[in-house]
Length: 552
Ligand code: NA7
Image (tube, rainbow, N blue to C red):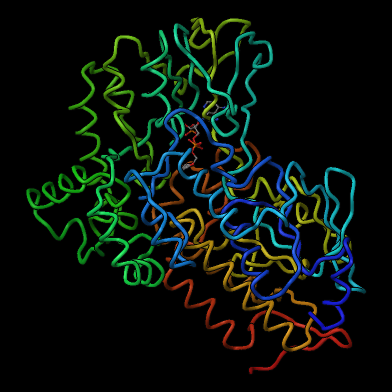
């Protein structure tokens, strides 16, 4: 960014940076840009901040990363002063936190709500983006940052007759703002991912009857959610420097926990069972950190999977239901593991029925029922817990046109390709936060968001200091990175599951393991090294001539 562009940026329709989305990524991006003196405009399609936590208001919605860790670390005052009330924060509290951050850092004045970015076109001669919003306005910006979220494009399934249903239809990822009362109703829930698994027990307490339509059984670990004590909060507050350092540098998934020193088959049966039992009793995502090879070795993975299968058999009284709820078709953890409160036990309630739509797919939805296996399940309301077009869905909704008029959707038709998950060749000055090719959804999202925002901020400051106005991923560097992302993924069990990580939940979507599974620590190091080598693998150019920046 040149001194001239800073002057130009004072006009109302030009910004140094346009940020798309005001979730946790967009908010922190704006805060950093402001701190560096850049002008920025954030467009947000919702009426408020919070992104995922703005939309996902379904009953029982809460984070599956512990609240003391699922929080920003960039402000010491914020992390010392904010009080989380539960081990896993419920959605309303996370949204409250997002609003608090927006107010505390005075972010709203640069965020335009209720506005979707419809189109972004790169002008190669001026190295500038034209960004058109849903209100028909066009602004220009030197840089565009996509902070559009990974699980933000709620997907309505293509089921025959869905629009005919006369009762209310809700999507967990697009839940109404006003309270929904299921009292006395027969409610159908389609989908048993995290959203279904969190909402079914809560809906079952209110509704007359809940019918759960399951296509694939899920592995789920108890959350063991509880009120946080002052002692627990204070421990984190006192130890934040080390907790955050560990999450960034040492933990594979950005979560502070013990790092396992051995594989599952290195222990005898009793010892292994005791370890799994301890993790099960503690609850939460770190169940999968009991051993260091659960994601790598099928025989090791089987020990964990069988442990959980045994728990399901113990909890669920009806053996046929227990069998149906038992995941058998993929290794544990290769579909995002779920964290629940009483999910399996809920099937012991007389008002809850499980329907196997794998064997008997839904034939159609009528005015009043879901029809499967020739049977009509009469319902008053239908909850679609059918997930998202993950990682690329929200980006794909924007018509983004780069060099030579190529669109991003054209370029990514066979699957997303990025360099470091941060940029994609042919689309200069366009950054993605927690995009495909970065640890993203495999990690504590806030750790990954902060890392990307900081990297992008440093990069923009570097460009300004060096009078550079164009940056683009080199094709060769991108190809190498994509190959590396694939290679690391294929060494794991992850590609064996039909998961949203693989794009498998969207008919026709290319099957590619989208996030980078190398771990947040090594990934951060790679990104830092790339920057230290003068942004190796990127082409950078000033206003006058295109030149590759030499190592500084
Ligand atoms: P998920 O994890 O994608 O789960 C969606 C569920 O909906 C899953 O059980 C799907 O079955 C099911 N589904 C999707 N489409 C259909 C159709 N057409 N018919 C029947 N069933 C269907 O989404 P969530 O919202 O639960 O969670 C997303 C992430 O948010 C989660 O992983 C956490 O990271 C937080 P399938 O397994 O594909 O057979």
